[in-house]
Image 1 (cartoon, helix red, strand yellow):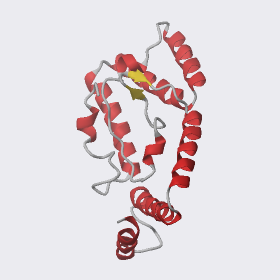
Image 2 (cartoon, one colour):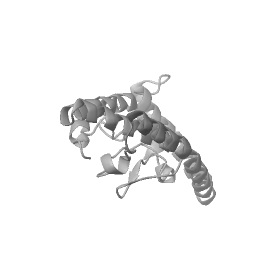
Image 3 (tube, helix red, strand yellow):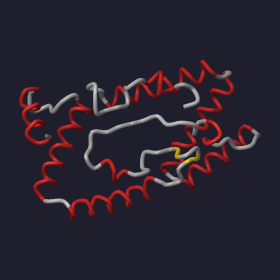
Length: 181
């Protein structure tokens, strides 16, 4: 957390509390990152760091594509390639989702771990997630699985869409209380 993003973001990425919305949290993350880059760095270094951030996001989608993009952008700048572990991987910013199966996400949403870039692509993470979910579903009772599934949908719709559009707030609270507790 080199730039002080945690302070700027506050609790906006904790989608489990404070009635935070995913869209608002993502907008705040983009805004904080951009503003703090230009506030703490020279304009040229801010652009270079944003480039490194973009390369790392691409790397998360496809490591091969990320490496190629990194090399291409480094050539355009005529310098050595920056790595996110040098620039940003010095602390963690917590992002929490209201989902009882979150443990199966493992490294899917991680960009950095212990100061180095996580080199697991989304495809590898997806396979790992499905294996974990299958194991979880096979070792949990059908009633608990159904309850978790409904609860996860309720919580996700509240976070993403500020409630379930086809039920009012009172009915939503009743459903959440009956299902999630």
